[in-house]
Length: 356
Picture 1 (tube, rainbow, N blue to C red):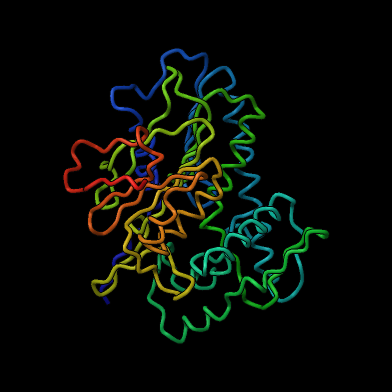
Picture 2: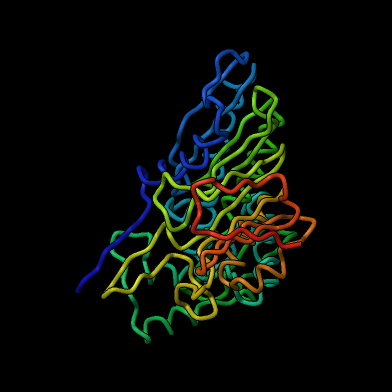
């Protein structure tokens, strides 16, 4: 069998992160000279690479506080830590409710509500199907029709029972599982921003596997700018730059980062809960910019699955803005980003259209 696996592990994720972060603003040095304090670093947690950069007198305290909060969240949400709250909910499916922290309960409630609003394009009970494909593992496979039918039968938002008074979560059927991969990074960005402000953060950012969270401005007073990766290029190529103001998060979903090929067919990691297969989308990538990181992460996944027409119809919300690339080499940009998105001068194969 002819199979090729492409998965962004630790090293490759770092390259992807650097595309967003090191390529901030052409003409600006990325490293500070004297800004009263500076701290940066890279951590691997929550199955992704997390990069931080903080400027100002509070930089060290903010960095350390972020590290602590990241580990707290990982201990609550990770599927890879057997004692995490999410892992325990999955392990006790069909047996008993699991008491969770208020923070995890609030996330589960929000994730369930958003799943219910998606028309089936987003579903946090998709974990059995994700595990079956194993696209982010070392041994992905195309499941048989029978295997997929069994896994699909385990989906069901109505069987995720949340008891607010008891602060418990319960999966009503054995072998059901939750996967928060399509929303957890955006939610974590919101949590980290809140904690950073509590710690007196002056300016800086965090990248969670490419999802960006901004606090303040650059030390020179200019807004932060980041390169948006070309979904058809390598890790050094980008479509253009986007300006991100204080308090905003950018989340991006695409089928180009994690996939495997079998018998000449590419299978990417963004699964459609309605079919159980990788989403047959006419989009290559969707980036969502919002002050609500949870919403941005959810929408980037959901709109990728729903496709171009649904995304175009949603492009002019007051709550977020979009940058989308379709398979016809067209870049679609929310009209609210005029003046905040600049096409890269070397990208002549794309056409750029604002949606007003």
